[in-house]
Image (cartoon, rainbow, N blue to C red):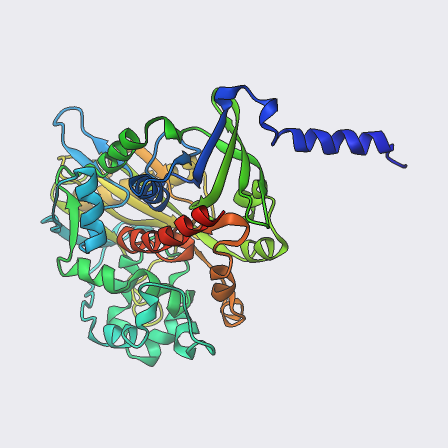
Length: 464
C-alpha cells in the first residue's frame, strides 16, 4: 500500500515541530551552553564544574534525586548515617578540590573492627579457609600497564595477558592464594574467573589498592548523599529531576543540540551548544539520541552484570560480625562462590542493622533478590546460633539496584579497537561522554577524566 504524500509530509512536520521553540510556552524552552544527561557521580561533577567555570548548564536526571551509585541512610533512632552504595573516595587532588568547593568535610577511611566469618551461603556452614592478601605479584603485573589507571588507551596489538580470562592469569602467575581477595574486592564484577584480566585490572587498580592501605577518604558524617545535596543547592532550577530525554537532534555542523525532555510538568525543549552524556551507554538508553551508525554499533556490544545493595535488620545474627560468602573448594574455584549470591552480610555502625551487597550475572527483580538474601540470612542464623532450628526472615530497610553494572566487551571486540572507536566519539555531533563505561568505577578517576573533558567542551562552546 502506498502512503499518501500528504501523510509523509504531516509526520515530517510533526517530528520537526517538537524541536521548534514556537511549539512551547516560553518557560518550557531552556537555552544553555551545555545539557548534561545523568545526575550520578560524573554527570553531577561535570554540571557543577561547568557552572563553576562560568558556563550555563541544565542537568537531566531520570530519578527523583541525584546520586547514581551513592546510597545513604540515616537511622531514625540514633541519627547515625550509613553509606550502603559508594563507600569511599580516592585521596587525590581532584577529590579534595571538589569537596572543598562543595564544603564537604572528609576524614581518612578506616575498616570497621568486625570479626570475619567465612561461610558457604548455599548451606550456611562456617568454613575454615585462609585468604591471601599479598598483592606483590599482582601489582607487578598491573604496573606493566600504567595507562590502565587513567584511560582505555590500549596499545595495538593489545598485550595478550590483558585479554586472558582471569582464571588463566591466576594460573600463569601463581596467584591462586590471592584470587579470592581480588574477587571479593571486585564486587559487582560477575562471572569473575571468566572476566578478562584487563577488566579486573580496571576495577582492582592502583586507586583501589591505595584504599586497602588507607589511601581513601570518606565524608566525615558518612552521608555521601550530602555531596549531591550540596550540588543540587548550587545548581538549583538547572536540575530537572524525574525527567528523561525522549527525542534529540544533534547537528553535524556545529550548530548545537536540541532535546525534548519529558518532565513531571510536561515536555520541555532544551537547546544547547554541547551535550555531556554520563548515563550507561546501552542501546536502549541511547535510542532517543538519534544515534549514528557507529554509535549504534558500539553501544550494542556491551555485556554487564547486575548489582544490588541493601540494609536489613531483624537478622537474628550476632553483633560485631561480617559474614562472607565462600565455598570449600580451593583447587578449581579458589573458594570463590557462584553468583547470583550476596558477597557478604555485614553489621553496620548501627547495632542490628546489616549491609548486604549482592551480584548476579543477569538482571533479577527486587523480590527475587530479597527472597535469596532472606534464605541466606536464615541459614546463617542456624550456624551462628548453635544450630538452632528456629529461624525468621529479616526486614529489608533499604534496597537499591545498581544495574547495569560494569559494562564490558569481549576480547575480540577489544582487539578490533573498540575503545579507540569509543574515544573517537568525543565531540562528534556536539556530544561528549563520561561515566563508568568510558573509564572506571572509581569516583576520583571519573572526576579527573570529566575534568579533562571540560576545556574541550568549553572550547567547542566558544567556537560555535
